Image (cartoon, rainbow, N blue to C red; front, top):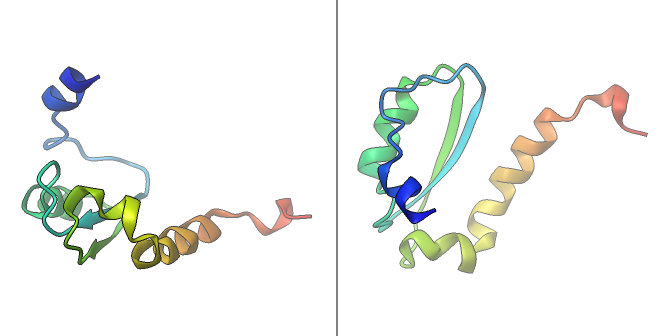
Length: 84
């Protein structure tokens, strides 16, 4: 799995689906300098840069900083006719 993660390159990929992404400051695995230019190439994106001192692990520790973004995006995908 680590080999796949370390060798997979999405830089040239343009996706035809919505992309919702979080970036964390001080992230050594997926730095903003690499992620944001790729996200800007996509046609339907929304992302949020989370200020954190915990880098990549910020998603484990500071849910309150990014949970609302995910909740908002998930709610936008719900089809009202399917809710009972």
